[in-house]
Image (cartoon, rainbow, N blue to C red; front, top):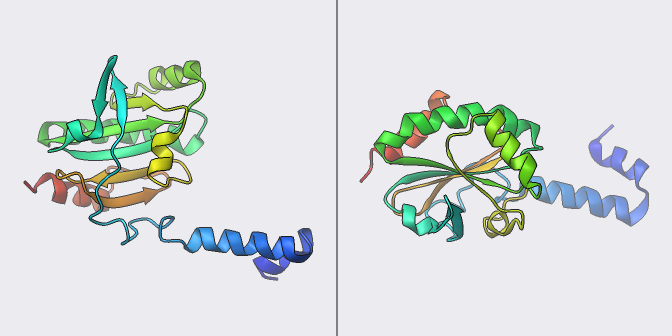
Length: 179
């Protein structure tokens, strides 16, 4: 029995068909796929955030390779990825790379606890309004974007990643080795 026929049994009529079509569209949409070619070369959306109480713009990081990671303290996949992101930060920081996490946590205490308990040592900012996430068209977390030294999107990653995997290390190294 197909997924569509199961969905039609649980939600009868046009509503079931509409939901099935919407789900298939979301999965097939280019913005959902990892490394979607439609993203390559586009300028990363500019945003302002606070670091150590000072306003910073994404543009202030121009010249660096940025891994922009969207996460939240309640996200189990994000928990599994935190240590890998810490190691990535250590691996790339001396070569002009930055890991910048944007949390959608509304609960500041949960956000701070996550950072403390997981010893997060990469740059992170709490955006409870989700405006930054929305400006990137991010629909799920974790989701990350690799941004080159000129501020252009080089790759999109949907779901938790092992940031020490040979494929991801190679992708990041290509950008780190470019001027």
